[in-house]
Each structure stands twice: as C-alpha cells, then as structure tokens.
Image (cartoon, rainbow, N blue to C red; front, top):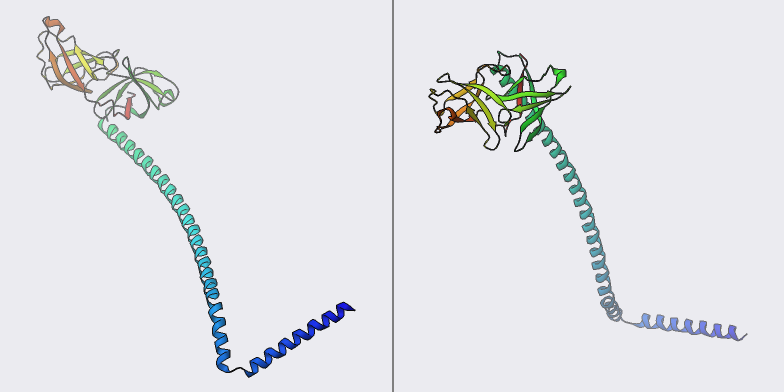
Length: 270
C-alpha cells in the first residue's frame, strides 16, 4: 500500500513538472528559444567536431595501412621479377659462354684442317710447384688414347697421359717432367724443351755448339719423338744464356699458349 502511494506521488510530480515546462515554453519568446538552441549548439558542436576529427583520423589511418599493404605487395612482386631477371641473365651468360666455346672450336678446327681432331674443354686443373696437368671432358669413348697430342689456337699444349671412358688427363709442356723435341724456325737447329712451372716457360737445351740462336725466333715441334706432329707452334725465344761451357748453352722459351686462360683444346686423333 505504501509503495503504491509513493509511486503515485512521483508520477504526479513528474506530470506537474512537464506541464510547467510546457507552460514556460509556450510563454517564452522565440528569441529565448533561439538563445537556448545556441547554448546547446555551443556545448554540442565541439563534441561533434571532435567526433568528426576522430572519424577522419581513423579513416586516414585505415588508408595508411592500406597503402602499406599495397607497397608490401609491390615489393614482393619486384623481388620476384628481379629474381626472374637474374635467372634469365645467368641463362644468357651460359649461352654466351657456350657460343664462345663453339666459336673457339670452330676456329681451331678450321686452323688445323690437316689433322683429325676431337674438341674438348677443360673441366679440372691441377697446377702446383711440381706438375702442370688438367682434365678434359673426352675419353676412350671418344677415341682418345694415351700419348695423343693436345693443341690450342696459339699452339702446342701437351699430350694425354691417362684416359678414362669419359675423361682424359693432359700433361702440359710447361710441366717439369715434359720434354719436347723442337726446331728453331730461322736456323733449323734442333733442341729439347723442358718445362718450368716456376717461370711458366720452357728451357731449350742440347743446342748444337755452332747454332746461332736469335731472340724472338719462333720454335716448333720437330716431329721427332713419336708424340707430337711436326710444325706445331711452341713459342718464341725470350732469352739466350751463353755459359762458360759452350755445350751448356740454353735458351728461355715463352710459350705461345697462355695456360692460365686456357679453356678449350683439340686432341689430335691422327
């Protein structure tokens, strides 16, 4: 009973307040209402502006993150394209190297038309203070045998010392254990050339006492010894050493072939 009376009293009070407000508003001048609206706007507008600013800020951040994602995607695409270009560049380099090798083979075969040859390229080098050898990519399956002569564009390289089915080991003429019978082109004098790795040269010995050796003279294979055909270029005389004993006179020979840059060769089959 008490609660019902209390609730009814509150309802009556609220009704009276509403009626009073309606009376006041109905009797208020239009300017007063306008003044009240302005006051409300003064309070509400900063809040609304702040809300709008915050909204725009959030929208801007969303755009920023969107741009970051786009840039990341573009960066990944560029990395992929760069990788593809690098791969194509490597392929072009391989093709270029193969073309150079084929051109060298062609030049060699055209130069040495009097020989039956097999082209090869070096797959491994073993150069130390004691030996100068390398391995080529042809072997017994290609008709390669021991003691076959090996030549390059500039001249004599060496000879085959061992063979497998698909590879062959070549001893160069600058190997200390190598010996080549040679002839001085201008005088026709004979000598024996032995290799010297330390100086990357050859030493011509057993020169006849009456031989008049000249600097810059060229020497070739003499055809003696059973390994190297006659007339293959070996190098030029860079220095002549006359000793007290005439018999011990010798000459230093600069090889025509640059063994440090050698990549392709021909093996003389016949």
